[in-house]
Amino acid sequence: MAAVIPAVTKLSSRIIRVLGCNPGCFTLQGTNTYIVGTGKRRILIDTGDADVPQYINHLRSVLKYEKIELAHILITHWHHDHIGGLADVMEIKDKTVYTQIWKHPTTETRDLKLKYDVEIMKNNQEFTVEGATIRVIHTPGHTTDHVSLHLLEDNAIFSGDCILGEGTTVFEDLFDYMNSLNTILELKPVTLYPGHGNVINDPEERIRYYISHRMEREMQILEILNNNRQQAFTESDLVKIIYIDTPVKLHQAAEHGIKLHLNKLLRESKVVMKDSKWRLNDSCIY
Image (cartoon, rainbow, N blue to C red; front, side, top):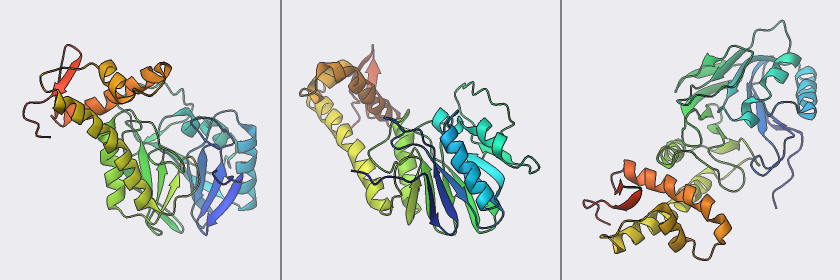
């Protein structure tokens, strides 16, 4: 069982975690938001969900007690549990201090209905406050706009929803997601601060598990297609084979996952698709 996450935790001399107080199936114990820096002007990473007074009260108390001004708010991605609380945060911060809000652009049309100007965040962009330098790493897959944030002083990464403190995450594009996992792995971070769940002190082990977990399913698909090279399969056909021991009521969700794998394999030219059916590419040696 996961350790209980307190409402407010001083994780290090430069990181304070404020829990979003929005527990749920996808948010686990809630969204982790982080205040980063050691001086008066600091950075806030993510803003939790909208209309969560408990979170806003905790955040207000921390800002007041630590005498913190927010220089920047960095949003990891567009999901409501990460950006939804933005308006509430802007209402409680010091109104005399100019705070810049940053988010990486998305390729999809999202009506976020934000009442504040949001600056365009770019890959490798750096944000500096006293005691902290954060470099942006575009890590799409969970969403197209998803970023992870590299705290250079500690070689630590705020991983958003790319890597969670417990369990695995969902994603929109598996090809991009796997590349993002490898991007983070290559940085050899000492610590991961996830968007949900507890701090990860064994980043390499966790990332390699995420990669192997996805590759196991991919190998199952390739094996079926390789053993039946003259046959084409729908996603439903593959689900019935791979998930033979899984209740039928869960097959629709499984189909979505299988399709994400197939789309990745298509981008890698390992499979071909015709008339909504899939088979191994003739040039693919498995």
